[in-house]
Image 1 (tube, rainbow, N blue to C red):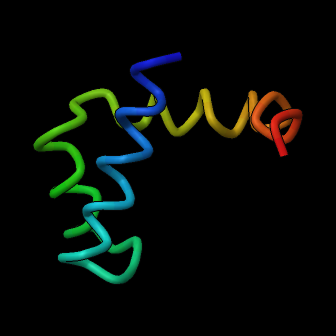
Image 2 (cartoon, rainbow, N blue to C red):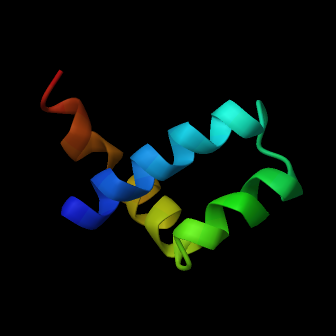
Image 3 (cartoon, helix red, strand yellow):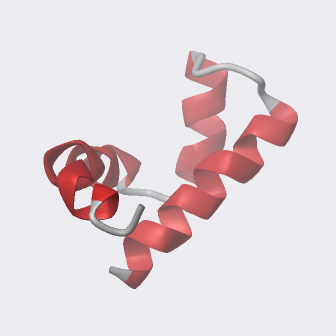
Length: 54
């Protein structure tokens, strides 16, 4: 889904500022992806779908 792709891009770009998954990292991500926890959960639950495109 488009919103998941957008979330992945936000997540990866946040690593330019924070090179880890610290509280500061997720606070930064939340500025751009308010429901990031829900989207992270979707990715965990559906990662097998993404593996189909490898």
